Image 1 (tube, rainbow, N blue to C red):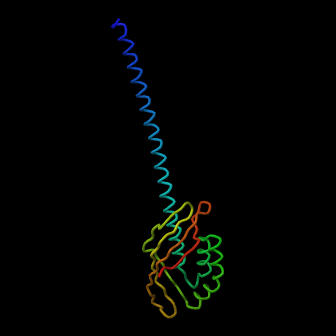
Image 2 (image 1 turned 90 degrees about the horizontal axis):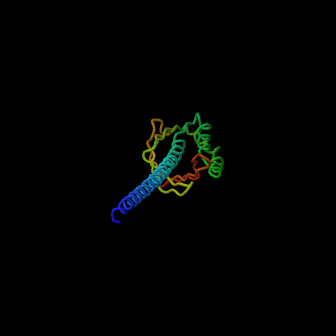
Image 3 (image 1 turned 135 degrees about the vertical axis):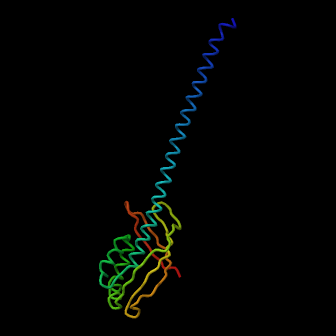
Length: 170
């Protein structure tokens, strides 16, 4: 009798081994799928963070790079990068801004020294920026270097990050 049960024991062992291997392979496939999803999520999050920082940096450059001769288009660049509420605030100050640039014969060239994401929750982010500009005007025709620190709040509207607030840090 012992001889007749040996083939069925081997068949059972083989069946268990194949089933275990199948379970292992399915588990590995699920793990690989979940890892891929995790990587994609992190890539999307990194891209979103970069886009928020880039939008904030672009708006600061637009603010610090202005010329009396192109004041209207310079201001339009600022307005184009802002949310509706911030757009309205800027627009209320537009005439005064243009007059100040023209009256002072102002030319300012700005650059970002450093920018970093401070916080991000969903479609809202806060970016800290250190910037510098060389400002020329009637009282300083050769230009005067200036340094700025700003906190910029951005919101994702549709597929664009737009500035919803900007504060100079003292």
